[in-house]
Amino acid sequence: MRLSKRSAALIATGLTGAMLLSACGGGDDEGGTGGSSAGSDTFSIYIGEPENPLIPGRTSETEGGQVVDSLWTGLVEYDNQTNEAAFTGVAESIESDDATTWTVKLKDGWTFHDGSPVNAQSFVDAWNWVAYSPNAADNSYFFSTIAGYDDLQAPTDDAGNVTGEPAATQMSGLQVVDDLTFTVQLSSPYAQWPTTTGYTAFYPLPPSFFEDPEGFGEQPVGNGPFQAEEAFVPGQGITLTRYDQYGGEQPANAGSVEYVVYAELETAYTDLQGGNVDIIDTLPPDAIASAEAEFGDRYIETEQGDITSLGFPTYDQRFADPNVRRAFSMAIDRQAISDAIFNGTRRPATSFLSPVVNGHRDDACDVCELNVEEANRLLDAAGFDRSQPVDLWFNAGGGHEAWMEAVGNQLRENLGVEYSLQGNLDFSEYLPKQDAKGMTGPFRSGWIMDYPVAENFLGPLYSTTALPPGGSNVTFYSNPEFDALLAQGNSAASDEEAIAAYNAAEDILIRDMPAAPLFNRLNQGAHSENVDNVVINAFGRIDAAAVEVVG
Image (cartoon, rainbow, N blue to C red; front, side, top):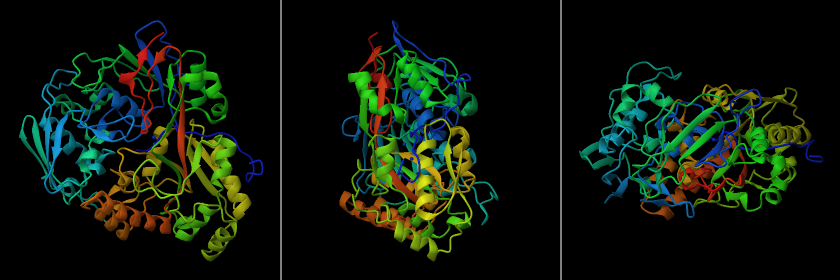
């Protein structure tokens, strides 16, 4: 999932003074109106401005994702302690004899917030809508493993222009058996497929969605522990109330949760200190060192299943040569930036995979350590024009300027390349610009896992089928050898065989370096005295249903 607001702060030159989701719209000139909930059965959470309406299939970033996850429950959920898929959601079972044809059985009694039943048709119709390319759903890619997905994609010419209508509106691999049963036929075996179905893209939709998708996105109707009895207000947020007929094992403890939009992370943090917002899921970098002492047991530190990278616009001639991209990677001192800006809470990335998933290798990336001499040799061999500055892109409002400036200072000192910071776009503008090949230089890229499988750090970001629109491959990297190894991993008969193929695919990425892995992080959040039982999981999500109001 593309991140939004994930962090940073100030650093000086080349480090002698030396990325899950980012930008956020605001409620007023200062960004955020506050949401103090002391003395009531409600609490408030800081978010940034969502990129899209609150429709699961169109929500591929953390801000809207936090709200959507409060409104919906999927087939499976992910255990907050182990990150493993658990059958605490709508699915009674997901079984297959061959890892290709899966039978999904649902629990009876689940309803949407409008009272309509959550049934097999709810899932099949939702998945077909998301997969159908004219709907331009950001999460379309996640259904590419299902038979018939290609028939729902509009034909295009060599330039990517749509030349006609898709051949079908429904994937042949989805079949409703009865109200509580449907089958899913994949285009090839994928033993880990059930684990993926807890992700946002796979949520069900009620019949009312198809009557008015846009209106639905403003005031969604889900099946989760909270419901929307009012519309989302851009720049302000939304208050959700407890759904008393919730069918899951974890009903909401609080009567309501207010999601408050802030333009700046620093403003949200000030409001937390002042008791005007109850929970923030990430701290400004300059607050990290003192936060534990200030908040005590209300300070939360969680290992994240994420990666922050420096993406390269492979479509730009200056960055088309892998040697240029490898040189830039070797010119960055990741540990120095972590120490100077993040108080050591960002671990230098050594892999395209997060350490929290099976398949991570501590020594995978041979160009992720500082090596100035080799970086300059590669840059010279590629004939890179050092006389022209490079643009460094990042979204506004998320605390990224300082660490991106640090990257720029290191490029200047270690490679003799000047830079220009491009950080004026809000997050809701930044992602579409990436999708439209608008990056004129290296750019901040954040990713947090959608499901705990190594493939999730590879396929959605770098496979050919994940190219925009309908995917998150914003470097526009494409390599058939990588795609083939990814498919081999997906169809492997065992986890061991899958990991071997995924690692081989990762080796291709390291050779081609469409993005430079920079950091994995320990996330820091905090909450007010008004709430307790606050959990921020490895997916970067606050478990809103679990929060208890105590003030």
